[in-house]
Amino acid sequence: MNRKIVFVAAFIVALFAVVAVTDEEYRILRPEGDHNHPGGDLSEKDLGWPKLNDIFENEHTFLMARLDQGYWFFLQIFAYKYGPQELWGIYGIVADDKGKKWFARREVKLKDIKLSHDNFSWQTGGTSVSGAYPQFNYVVREDAFGARLSVKCRFPGWRIGRTNLTADKKTYSDVYMHIPWGRVSGTLTLDGKEIPVTGNAYGDHFHGNQRFDRADPLFYSVRALSALPGYPDMSIEATYNHFHPTFGKISTPGLIIMGQDGFIKATLYSAINGQDFEMNRELGYYFPKRLIVKSDTEGFSFRGVFHAQRCIQVLDILAQLPPYVRKVAEVFFKLPVMSKWDGVFEGIYTLNGKETKFKIRALSEINYVGGRDAIPKL
Image (tube, rainbow, N blue to C red):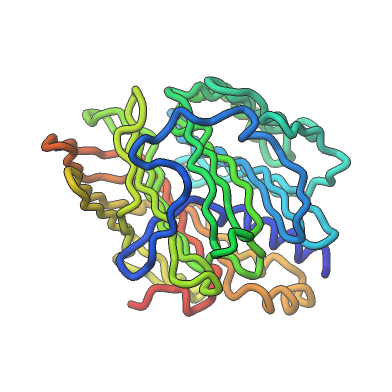
């Protein structure tokens, strides 16, 4: 298979390999982690970079941050093994509130990487990640931008654990939330200028062996990191994921509320629904301008609305390939489009009789891989 196609496949699977939630139509596929008692069980070994031995295997670490100086920051380091080919890559974005963006993506050869199987350390050239609880360090030296960031966790991470996608447990994913909610400080280097920054961050680490031609067809997420003035300081994560139909009608849930001192609530029972869809004329598909998040369990009720204010990125992966490569890649992917939206997440939740209102600067990801059938019907 063409190396360019496999690299694109690795890029897609890395971006889509995430913990998820479900609605009433889909069977809940439970991860091993205890959602009644989240957090505090993550080890350095969990964040190591294992050898990729399966025929299909993928790995990534992810960091996103909302910076007080008016920037969103994203960094993802990923690996993908398809048969004899093992490919690694770096994907990063910085976007400011005025609409300017700095985008980096490149392939990395395994021989050029220094990594640890026992801890978080990974390095190639001038780009690296390192550290352990309570502090993780990220250094980026790419052509598009640079960064030197330290993230101090407010509380310990969580081994969300293994989700088995098949009954024989041979197809699985492991998710480790090493930065549930951290305080970030450091510098960005943009257009040659070094800028001191502070803010809030989220990070996770993933390992699995899902084939790239069975990537999840539809994914919504809302990650809210920085509360607006006058509202409680908290972070909320909600995601919604349809697994590939090969695995049946299943999703893995996750609505998580966090405060200064730790996890407030984690539940497997929630849903995200898109509303106010608008057509993107250039690419020919719809995006929801609002995402409605709901949950109702014993002693807990949640209602939240994400209002998309601007698009940070719309990335049609196949459109970036040469025409002859795209024809082959289209055999495996129908409309692999990824998007990021800046906005505000607001609402109210009730826990054990106490109501809490929230309004938080947030980012939504809306991704389609399953072609037109994956796009919600209007």
